[in-house]
Image (tube, rainbow, N blue to C red; front, side, top):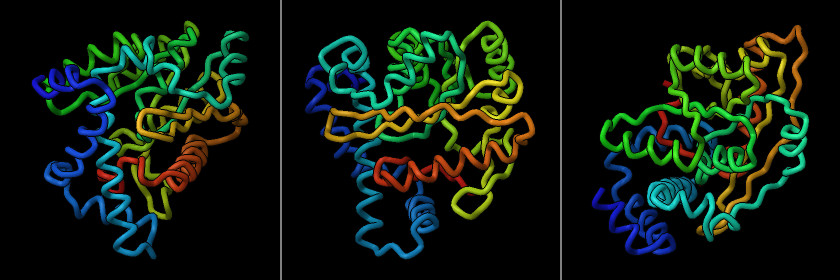
Length: 273
């Protein structure tokens, strides 16, 4: 709360910069340096130490910027920062809205990943976002308030209970937005960068149950406070596609996103545990 207050006083430009530098310094304290380096080496087996350190440092810098930017979500949604988010593929979203279609939006923890659901909600798409509560219960309360007020009012907690609520919302026309890059306990083992990793099957389950397409989204931090959100064309899977195969194909899309911008993906997840 003290840090958020200081950020609010300093303003978003200085706070985002300081947040990035702060996390570069203290980030390795919170997460094992070994896990991050092992993950990077798994994806880039021939990487040299200089490049590895650069990805590691850039990741923490982006992580810190995201943390600092939470307190300014109001400005990203309706204020002066809203013009800093460019949407490539806006026509795809407009078509979904105009046709009153429901889809499953998928992405990963890239750049300021919270802006994805915010932009979808701003466009008046009926959307429910799945999130994982933070381990810190005090910070989680703050984040939940910010998310429900400025990002997406329909926040669904990850888990069996959340999945049931999600299915109810899908039945009344809501689309779903979720990140597919974290390790889950209720998922399946699916190939991810040539090694099996527990992966969520929620997108596959929803597309099979409701016969709806999946729309990948990639958000990239182009400059300090400027972002580009790329919306892919909807993917329609045939009836005979298995949950396992759909999940594998989505992992392949996620791999392409990570390779495109490795310095802005959160490598600290113990993805292949």
